[in-house]
Length: 119
Length: 326
Image (cartoon, rainbow over all chains, first blue to last red):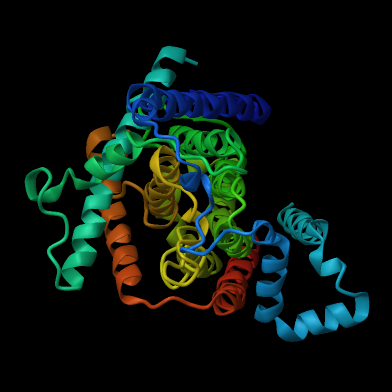
């Protein structure tokens, strides 16, 4: 069995990012562009109804278009950890729990703690 | 580094073409097994005992017209889905299954980056449509991956940390997967760490793969079809392709790190037999996932997230601490 050993993680990241882009391009050309050109474009029918969004038979209204994803996310989290959320929001307001940087800050903090412990 | 071999690996074996064949086989197996459990026959018309049914379904979607809703993003979903697939395909070259793997010290960073990217690619692709059902699905999906991905990655880190301490694996996923059978018996803390990580890793795996009871982002009949609501034709084919490829790559990584990889056969002794052993173990993990998915009901989003943090995350943190102390 043979292998390619790269001594530098930065070069490896660059190589793999390039390979990812190359494989992605291959997938895009083979499974999207080629099939679209060969089949999809030939059966195209213009119909304004099929360009409407799926609303299970109801008429799509413009106010239905925007359901804030962050509100759904925060709602699920607040229902999952009721007591912790109550403590957090009563102490710091609701702004913090709607802030993506807050969650990323917690992840970053955990990474730093683990790396310090593993040193 | 031999570029021609690398390109062949990327597009033929164990890359794109091989993954397509595996997707067809595994999907047929999943559908047949879950049908049998529900006293149905499952796919049986296309190809011998219905083996080509997933192939027919995939190409039917690809050959359809590409319908894009009026106020949706045109290019971002397709680009994100293609790159997500590219990440999963490229990550196979880090495993010993590749004929000529490419690795480096700390290559586990690349693996984790690709795993997170493939999940984010699904979220990014479906965010391109303004449908309320889709948006509820994306909110649920983000809550799921924010909870399940750290559990899975922390669990995968445990064997890597232990192998780096005792076998000088240099935090390399590739080297760890070669020594993984020896990690269970080094000493008591390492065995405890591996057992905890095995359980946490499986919970994380189920979460990331949206196996029931964690399938609430797509929740058909509840939020129509959740994250997949707005898609059909080639776009849906690409999203399914990522999802089904994740169901191949993640259990293989799990087998390589926790279930001894190719043991009792070594990759240096007999490469093809070792690959067969890995796939035999993979099919056992895949069958267990299929059984659970068929038998379990669906959790509510808050129940699932609470379960993941309460049991999955706490086990993963304990496993990490035990691996550091080992």
